[in-house]
Amino acid sequence: MAKERVLVTGGAGYIGSHTVRQLAAAGYQVVVLDNLAYGHEGAIVDEGVELVLGDMSDARLIESIFAQGPIACVIHFAAFAYVGESVTDPIKYYQNNTAAPLTLLRAMEKHGCRQFIFSSTCATYGEPERIPITEDLKQDPINPYGRSKLMLEWVLKDCDRAFGLKSVFLRYFNACGAAADGKIGEDHDPETHLIPLVLMAIRGERDKITVFGTDYPTPDGTCIRDYIHVDDLADAHLRAFAYLSQGGQTTAVNVGTGEGVSVKEIIEKAEAVTGQKVPLEYGERRAGDPPRLVADPSKAKKVLGWVAQHRDVRSSIESAWNWMKSGEGQGRFLK
Image (tube, rainbow, N blue to C red; front, side):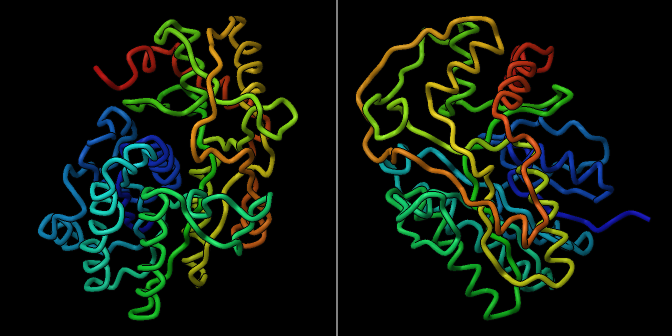
């Protein structure tokens, strides 16, 4: 017997598409809602997955999806995520990341859908009081992107009090890597993530990369981040769904490995994986870049039974490199 119907907003994007594959493999009926502003139709590779083109603020479209049958859970990825752009165009971010989902939430209230998994971010913590970061730390985001995500967390808590909507806020750290079979991977335009930028420079798709700051209070002077493989992130969403299905209450969970890797270490590992040197230059620090951002993932293990399987970032780099070299990844999804 087929499992429940699940609505995935932004399911044609990077993390969304990897989660859709795991949902489909687990037998769920998956409906993807994506306006393809940043997603790619080619990232939906599993048979039986329904792709609906449109926006979550379109009340008629949302109503038509719910009218076709019960939705057991909404997994919400659809968001803009460029920090710099959020500073120069904050209205765009508050409109899309905070306001647009309200239409979706109203439909969930009407149709009795009471499970919501939110793709949140460690950016809601801003510059954290201590490392590793636990979920009870003060949330004080330093840019409109982080604030737009935090505002939706507040909205979801209010919806819980008002009509019993139960949510899991998955606060991501640095997503990376690609599917093991090389069918889908990371394809942003513009690309801002370190690992694909390094690999693009090695492939000659970029002249070089710039290392911003070498004088941070870290062992090698470069920023340290927690890199989490995209398949591990996808697994966290399925576990969050299971948690809610078993009567779990609204909660926030950090999703990271608990281990920090510096910019220089990423470059060294990429060179080891590819056997090629990374063309690079050194620049000044960027404003707002904390020296170290690393998760404490102990709550994810306790509440969701989730532990990262790809703990060595080299495996994530290898999967990203294999994707870029594959037939699917040569031109990415921009064909």
